[in-house]
Image (cartoon, rainbow, N blue to C red; front, side, top):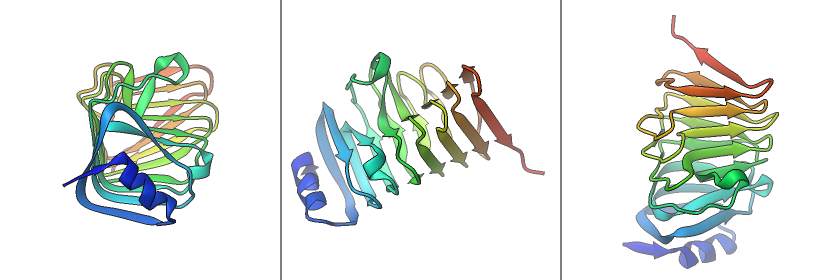
Length: 191
């Protein structure tokens, strides 16, 4: 069963805090952006094809659970043209659990985190994107990756720029690029 973006938006506007789509497909053209504008929303059990998710500060507290994002996603409107299948700017306490962020088109990574946003990614994967699995940039930006994989991305697993911080625990930390003063990558190893 398919749900168009307008149907999902209508449910969202009616005040639902938990959107459980029961495995339904949300279908976009490859150029749509769904913006999260309410705090503490949970989106679960969905397949999203041809659209990306934009989370700004007003979307703090977002929970994505068991959501599969698939391409094509060819939106290009962020700094330098780089975007994410899921893109988070300044939002705090965003959690991504048991999700797949894939199919990012030209200049599109799986997860783009900026402007001091804080995101926890657990038991998830960012793969098959034309840019990085995770792109983190800006002072105060933090990404924690727990038991997650960032493989098969065209430009590498992750890049960390301009004072951002990425912490890996379990999962595989593959090629990571650090750019700019204060950028940090932490690896937690099992003893």
